[in-house]
Image (cartoon, rainbow, N blue to C red):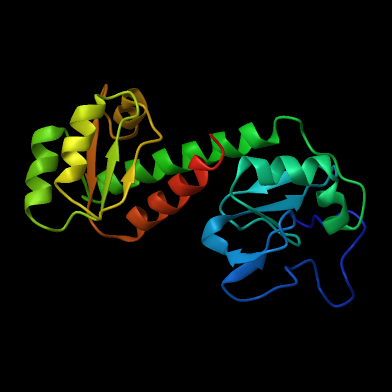
Length: 205
């Protein structure tokens, strides 16, 4: 997608980059300025299709939306992507599902990297042992696990973020096991990225 430009061109002197700078961007659906951690960036592809830029690295001027399915649906129905891009664009009818899948893959990939970086404890016994160290930064509880067991684990670390948007086979696959219900994460940049993307994913499922 190198060299792509939004439909209709960019404002003079913009060189295809975002018009806004700093830690916030304006959601094209709500009009609110929000931290980028709460938003999804989109760009216009070479075929004038709207492309989700989950990592925020694709070239072109960004079109930002709050990470919620209803925001994306509003933008599509009211042609807000075209308005923001200043030209005709193509919005896939399954764009929200595509965003959700990309976020899901990114989270699980980062979980695998966190495992290799030594930030992960998995399985009830190992998770409890990590919690006992007082260093747990996040819990991931399988959505298909026992609700009572998930609540018991969460009660051991009040105030610690809990992610519950993945199934036990998904969690297991990410860290090289068949199925996992309980995962604990130590502090680190990967943990921060997992929490950020999981929060966005929740807005789409």
